Amino acid sequence: MTFFSHGPKDDPVTALAGAANDGVLAVIIRVDGPSYRPVGAFMAVFPGEKRRVGTLSSGCIENDIALHAGEALKTGSPRTVLYGRGSPYIDIQLPCGGGLEILLIPRPDRETLAILCAKHAARNACTLGIDLKTGILAISAQGETALTATRFQVRILPDLFFYTFGKGPEAGAFATLVASAGYPSLLLSPDEETLEQGRATGCPVRHLKGAEWSLDLKPDEWSAVVLFFHDHEWEPPVLQGALASQAFYIGAQGSQRARDLRLTELAKMGVGQADLNRLYGPIGLVPSARDARTLAVSVLAEVLKVAQTLPELA
Image (tube, rainbow, N blue to C red):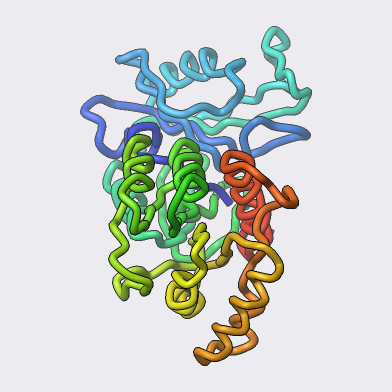
């Protein structure tokens, strides 16, 4: 499985779908041993512009990939290139000691790529299939990442989305960290200073007028909802709404005592035990984090750890 790069500016598929000039789609189809990027990682190469979007290594093979991409563009035929372990190019070594097989597809069908981008924007998981001989692309709703003698396909998942609720430095620090890491997100707060901290890093924000869940918020199974309120009276209505969603992670800042009070209040509101069991808290991998930055890193690490247990990633 793979995720798109975060944001349209650095996404290879988006770049190729909207490009004015011919380009080449480079994709990792096989990994032997350790690797900087996973199977299914994309890079776009525009030989005529001497431009690349994305990366397939830590920087050790991109220039050579661009040369092969130029040749593929001239012949009009897909080709594979092997680097590292088992490669004929002994002058190019991978620092990780592994091997990478790269498929280069000249002039990939832009209409198919545009459909792929639309599905990604709509947060729909899908599978991209590629004929190794012709480079013909096909999109399907189902299918796992796999390589055969004639075909490669990769499962493409939506980016993780973060809904951050709260007030104060903890909410601001977490929203800033998430935005800086390139994840799509939304910061909701009743505090203008907290919202301004989010705006400063390009995080979309919304003023929270009261302790309530907005019905237009619809977290999907790739979404996390995290609360950072010192005044825990803000929490129950928001958590009730979040627990009614498909969000894979729902957590709230606070001590074990705050968690117990939170669960008691939610139970009084009619939230069932199965949903109560979904609630994380105290949140974060670092116990008793005492400053906003440490807590932010700790919570983000926990969310990403939980994400690795999702059925399509496990």
